[in-house]
Image 1 (tube, rainbow, N blue to C red):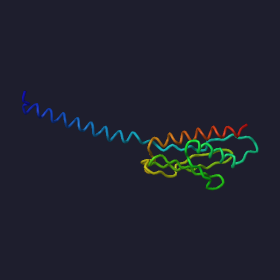
Image 2 (image 1 turned 90 degrees about the vertical axis):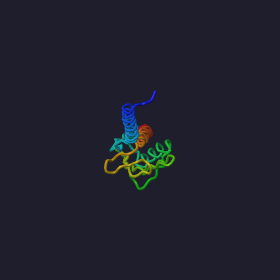
Image 3 (image 1 turned 30 degrees about the vertical axis):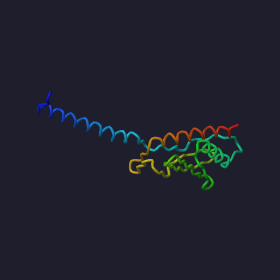
Image 4 (image 1 turned 180 degrees about the vertical axis):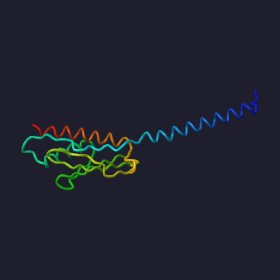
Length: 144
């Protein structure tokens, strides 16, 4: 059955809408992969009397290594963590003392970090959350 001009116009309009919806879904699916940067700020530490900031650093290092992070001491009270997965790299600063620690975004590669909006690929936040949880577990060994 031949398509008349009116049906052709309706079909081309429908096709344009379909293409627009497909394009919008691609654009918005890319946006949903971004999230506000998650930093851990001044998480309190309770450790046994006599434990030092070096003990805290070693706990942070053990926690990171267990998750694939490379943790290095920059100076007393400041560690740096690097996580490299495939083509992605996340770098954080971890200031610490015997009373608290923080995990702060420093830099990244291939994680779509936007400084103006303070957004990053949502996987980064999961990595930071996992690191924070692992640090808490390691620090709990300093209480006994």
